Length: 106
Image 1 (cartoon, rainbow, N blue to C red):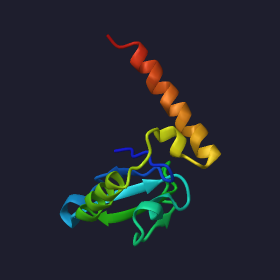
Image 2: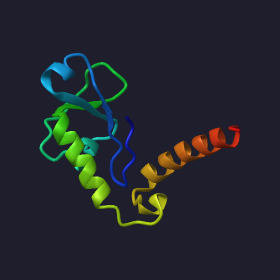
Image 3: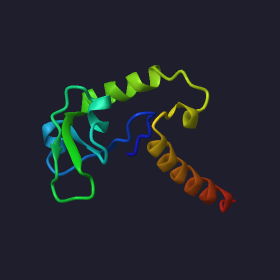
Image 4: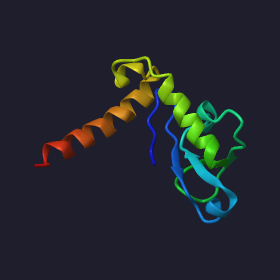
Protein backbone atom coordinates (compact mmCIF):
# COMPACT_ATOMS: atom_id res chain seq x y z
CA UNK A 1 0.00 0.00 0.00
CA UNK A 2 1.40 3.35 -0.96
CA UNK A 3 0.41 6.24 1.26
CA UNK A 4 0.98 9.80 0.07
CA UNK A 5 1.05 12.25 2.97
CA UNK A 6 2.08 15.91 2.95
CA UNK A 7 5.39 15.06 4.64
CA UNK A 8 5.86 11.33 4.09
CA UNK A 9 5.48 8.56 1.52
CA UNK A 10 5.48 5.19 3.28
CA UNK A 11 4.97 1.89 1.49
CA UNK A 12 3.35 -0.76 3.66
CA UNK A 13 3.56 -4.46 2.87
CA UNK A 14 3.44 -7.86 4.55
CA UNK A 15 6.79 -9.53 4.05
CA UNK A 16 7.76 -13.08 4.91
CA UNK A 17 7.45 -13.60 8.65
CA UNK A 18 5.29 -10.52 9.24
CA UNK A 19 2.02 -12.41 9.62
CA UNK A 20 3.44 -14.71 12.26
CA UNK A 21 4.98 -11.79 14.12
CA UNK A 22 1.87 -9.59 13.86
CA UNK A 23 3.86 -6.93 12.06
CA UNK A 24 3.92 -5.15 8.74
CA UNK A 25 6.98 -3.88 6.93
CA UNK A 26 6.92 -0.12 6.43
CA UNK A 27 9.34 1.08 3.79
CA UNK A 28 10.50 4.54 2.82
CA UNK A 29 12.64 6.13 0.15
CA UNK A 30 13.44 9.36 1.98
CA UNK A 31 15.23 9.60 5.33
CA UNK A 32 12.70 10.47 8.03
CA UNK A 33 9.57 9.48 6.11
CA UNK A 34 8.88 6.43 8.28
CA UNK A 35 9.52 8.31 11.52
CA UNK A 36 7.22 11.15 10.42
CA UNK A 37 4.30 8.74 10.78
CA UNK A 38 5.65 6.06 13.12
CA UNK A 39 7.58 8.03 15.73
CA UNK A 40 8.72 4.98 17.72
CA UNK A 41 9.89 2.98 14.69
CA UNK A 42 13.32 1.41 14.66
CA UNK A 43 14.36 2.12 11.08
CA UNK A 44 17.13 0.26 9.28
CA UNK A 45 18.91 1.48 6.18
CA UNK A 46 19.90 -0.70 3.26
CA UNK A 47 18.78 -4.24 2.79
CA UNK A 48 19.50 -4.57 -0.89
CA UNK A 49 16.13 -3.50 -2.27
CA UNK A 50 14.87 -0.38 -3.98
CA UNK A 51 13.55 1.06 -0.70
CA UNK A 52 16.44 2.48 1.30
CA UNK A 53 14.66 2.49 4.69
CA UNK A 54 12.44 -0.03 6.44
CA UNK A 55 10.92 -0.91 9.79
CA UNK A 56 8.87 -3.76 11.22
CA UNK A 57 5.87 -2.26 12.97
CA UNK A 58 2.99 -4.01 14.76
CA UNK A 59 -0.03 -4.21 12.47
CA UNK A 60 -2.28 -2.51 15.03
CA UNK A 61 0.19 0.38 15.37
CA UNK A 62 0.16 0.82 11.59
CA UNK A 63 -3.64 0.88 11.59
CA UNK A 64 -3.73 3.40 14.45
CA UNK A 65 -1.17 5.69 12.79
CA UNK A 66 -3.13 5.70 9.53
CA UNK A 67 -6.33 6.38 11.45
CA UNK A 68 -4.63 9.31 13.17
CA UNK A 69 -3.48 10.70 9.82
CA UNK A 70 -7.04 10.60 8.48
CA UNK A 71 -8.41 12.26 11.60
CA UNK A 72 -5.91 15.13 11.22
CA UNK A 73 -6.79 16.04 7.62
CA UNK A 74 -7.55 19.74 7.53
CA UNK A 75 -6.76 20.67 3.94
CA UNK A 76 -9.17 20.97 1.02
CA UNK A 77 -6.47 20.28 -1.58
CA UNK A 78 -3.81 17.66 -0.95
CA UNK A 79 -1.30 19.00 -3.47
CA UNK A 80 -1.38 22.40 -1.77
CA UNK A 81 -0.59 20.79 1.60
CA UNK A 82 2.80 19.48 0.42
CA UNK A 83 5.34 22.14 1.44
CA UNK A 84 8.58 20.48 0.31
CA UNK A 85 9.02 21.48 -3.34
CA UNK A 86 10.88 18.34 -4.42
CA UNK A 87 8.28 16.10 -2.79
CA UNK A 88 5.50 18.18 -4.36
CA UNK A 89 7.06 17.80 -7.81
CA UNK A 90 7.45 14.04 -7.36
CA UNK A 91 3.83 13.71 -6.22
CA UNK A 92 2.71 15.78 -9.22
CA UNK A 93 4.40 13.30 -11.55
CA UNK A 94 2.42 10.49 -9.91
CA UNK A 95 -0.76 12.60 -10.15
CA UNK A 96 -0.10 13.22 -13.86
CA UNK A 97 0.48 9.52 -14.54
CA UNK A 98 -2.77 8.57 -12.82
CA UNK A 99 -4.65 11.39 -14.56
CA UNK A 100 -3.38 10.02 -17.89
CA UNK A 101 -4.50 6.53 -16.88
CA UNK A 102 -7.93 7.90 -15.96
CA UNK A 103 -8.28 9.54 -19.37
CA UNK A 104 -7.91 6.15 -21.06
CA UNK A 105 -10.60 4.41 -18.99
CA UNK A 106 -14.17 3.95 -20.17
